[in-house]
Image (cartoon, rainbow, N blue to C red; front, top):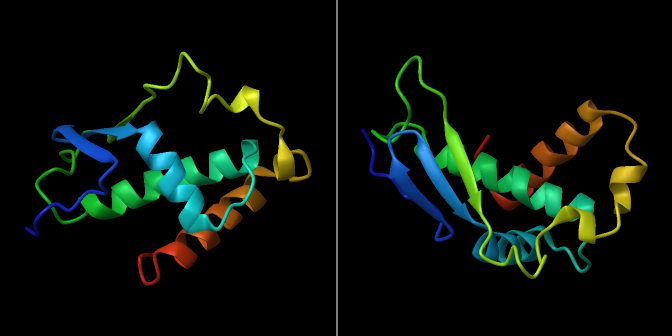
Length: 120
């Protein structure tokens, strides 16, 4: 087994359960993605890339859930009262023009590969 190295915005709660701190994750991921403006597309892209990054960090460690277990990712938003990371508070952006979930998934995968070369 290899040692667990989660991003600074992620916290292992127990085996297979990880808390993502939104107030730390979104700014870092948006910067790494090269996003200049916040909209639903970029916030969603940041969250999906964060999920992939956590999953990638867990592979080969004791923190991975057991054979029949599911990985639980909990996004904790301490800024919830301000609405800072609530998707509905932002314009849809590119999400409006996407034709299918498959094209969005392909964009997420490409973005993740760009910010984590060699990860997938």
